[in-house]
Length: 418
Image (cartoon, rainbow, N blue to C red):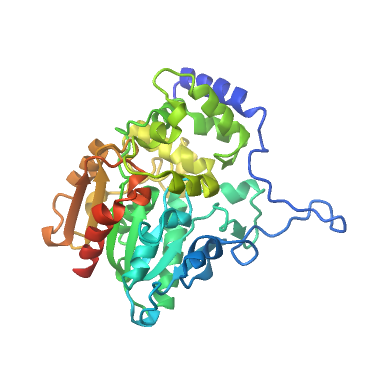
C-alpha cells in the first residue's frame, strides 16, 4: 500500500483536477428523444449504425470490408473489422491464412489503418494475401455495447487488462478461428496488445488456435519505462485517486484528464508542445497526415481500473493480476492474499515469436524489453526472431512512413516460415 504522504498527494492533486469534470468526463453518448422516457438511452455506437471503420478507413481505398461483432463471456459486445481481400481482387478468403491485429492502450482498431494503403499494416497484409481481422477492445467507441450494462454504469468499467486476457482475446480468437474454417491464426499486437497476448500464452491459453505471434513495442515489465507522463502519473497514484473520486472511466478527452495534463505540463522536463514525444519517446518517421487521422479518431477511453493495474506494474516491476491492496479482496478473487503472477518464462519454448522494439521508445523501454528477452532466453532459436530498430519510438511501429520496409516486410517473411 502507498504511504500516507503519497496517498495525500494523489488525493489533493486529483481532487483539484477532477472537480470540474467529475463524473462528466466521458464523451456524451446519451440521446433523449422528446417522446422517450426520461433517462432512456440510445444504444451505444456500433459500426452498423454509424460511419464505422469499414466505411471511414477501408472502403474508401477500394477494399472489401466487413463489420462483425462478438460477445464475450462477461457480456461485452466487441466490434471487429475484416478485410478479406486486397485491392487487386485476390482469391477468396477461405484459402487464406487469417491474421488478427490487436491495438494498444487508449487506441482502437484504426491503429492499423492510420496511414495510406502502402504504409499501414492492415492494408499491406490484405494486399499480400492474408485474411485480415481487426479487434477493438471493450470501452472503445465501437465496442461500447454490453448485454445488460450501459457505459454510464460504474459496473461497466469494472475491469483491467486481466479481463482482456480472460475474455476479450479468447472471444476474438474463437470467433476468427470459427469464421475461417478453424485455420490457425497469426497474431500481431502493439503495446498493450502484446501484454495481453504474453499473459495468455504464459497461461497456456489460445495456443491451439495460434500459428505465430508478432509483438511490436512489447509491454511486459514496466518499471524502467522512461516516459515522464506515464512514470509521473504512476508514481503520484493519479489513477488510484480517480477511482476514489468515482471516475470509473478514464477518458483522455475528458476535462479531468485535460486538467491533469495542464498541471503536469508545467513541471520541469515536460515538453507539452510535443505531447506525443513526451508520452511515447521521439518518433522518427511520422507524417502530418497520419497524425491528423490519429487525432481525428484517438485517443480512446479505457477503464480507470486498467490504468491502476498498469501503474502498479510501473511502481513494482512485476507482472501480476490486479492487486486489490486488501487481503480479503485478493483472497475473494484469487484464493490467496497476493495477486498471482504471470510467469513469462512459462511461455512455450516452441511458440513462433517475432519481437520488434525501438531504441527511442519510452513506453516499451529497451531495458524492460531486455528483461523480457532474458525471461525467454531458453526459447527455441528456430522459432524466435528479435528485431531492434534504433531510431523507432512507440508510435513508429504503427504509424511510421517507412514501417513497411523496416518492420512489416520482415514480419511477413517470418509469417511465411511458420
